[in-house]
Image 1: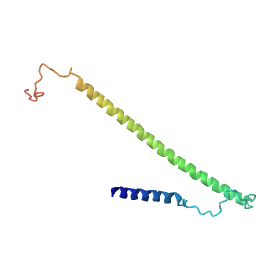
Image 2 (image 1 turned 90 degrees about the horizontal axis):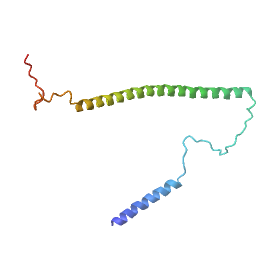
Image 3 (image 1 turned 180 degrees about the vertical axis):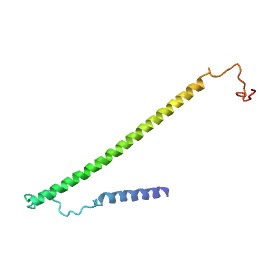
Image 4 (image 1 turned 90 degrees about the vertical axis):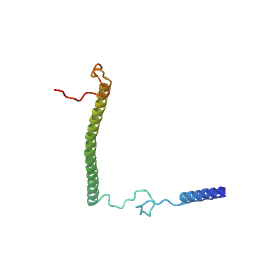
Length: 126
């Protein structure tokens, strides 16, 4: 009984996988019905107004990309500052921990002759 159920589940998974392989891939935003990938000259390549329009759109595209690079530079500089702050904080923590470990192991600060098992005396008799 269990063998049949497992067999049915695997068959369903195999059928679903085959259907996904055979299903055509959909590329969103692809509205080009003509599959020719060769350049087709529309006769405007010598028109100065057309060339100026193309040049202006290329300049705008490059300007937009440079603005994005400038924004990325600002983000990287901000992250660099944060990395420096984190490095300083981690260094401070490790230094404090090292100092705490050395003070825990330092027996010169403990007066073993006058030490009591209850801890330091808190009575002020002055």
